[in-house]
Image (cartoon, rainbow, N blue to C red; front, side, top):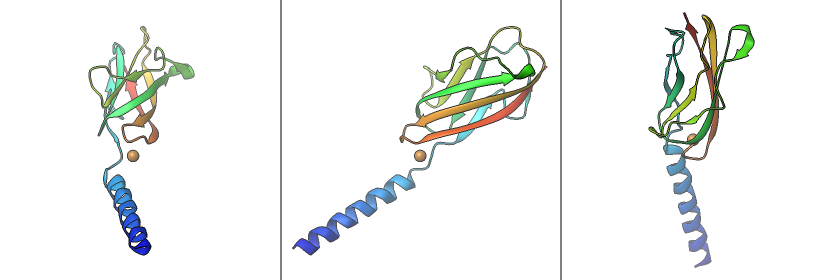
Length: 120
Ligand SMILES: [Cu+2]
């Protein structure tokens, strides 16, 4: 009976792990401005959309002169659970920008990444 219990417990544990890994990790899906794209210096926000829900996150945008052009540390979009957003400062300069993000996905995994875009 004890052997049966152990085997049963192991089977339950294995299927739980399988179920967890079968649930795909949240991935970068799209952004505004788009990755590698060029947008106007008049943008007021930068957003990153993921393939699934996130709990929280940060978004920081640096640009010309190695300065930070985002306002605050960003966070999950109140209107969309899978989107991160950060407001941008006014008076953005033309040039290359880099957006760096960190998230805690709904499955509890911490992830981070970055992408670049241009403003003109
Ligand atoms: Cu995950």
